[in-house]
Image 1 (cartoon, rainbow, N blue to C red):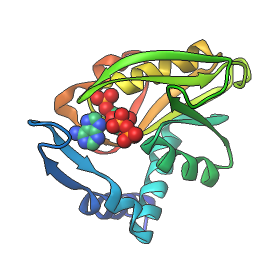
Image 2: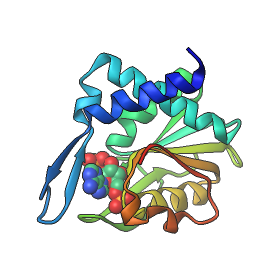
Image 3: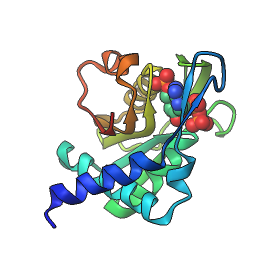
Length: 181
Ligand SMILES: O=P(O)(O)OC[C@H]1O[C@H](OP(=O)(O)OP(=O)(O)O)[C@H](O)[C@@H]1O
Ligand SMILES: Nc1ncnc2[nH]cnc12
């Protein structure tokens, strides 16, 4: 099989494992549940392999950064596969000082993310990874934090982009790729 047919079959498998849950966590939201991908050995491998293929469009990078919690679940295995380090962008109150913080709105609420200040080498090339791009609030906050921490963000990769919510409009000036839309 060629790489493109592998990517197509990986996409198909991963798509089949994502479940749509209406009205969760609040009325009107269709929650895209990726737990089925994590729980299936072949599906999880297909997801990480597919993300690596998509990420290869961004050229070289030194680190993968993922947003807590689901960005950790896909970002850390991706970093391991690619042989680069991982930067955890955490929900507020989990990291010891010094930290940089950013508060943001997402599809169903608001939250604060933090990153350790002084741990990213100045100018390090960082790929930002998360499972879902919805409104883009989380991703934009992550990019802002990583810039403030000294990173050169080379682009963003998502498992699934919910195009109707136009999250990439919040990420203008950055390369954005998704395994699935
Ligand atoms: O594009 P947005 O509208 O910002 O939404 C996308 C974010 O929402 C989810 O995280 P959530 O905050 O629910 O946290 P979790 O990863 O801990 O489940 C998802 O994992 C993304 O990080
Ligand atoms: N619709 C959705 N499904 C899963 N995670 C999300 N994060 C933000 N919106 C989401």
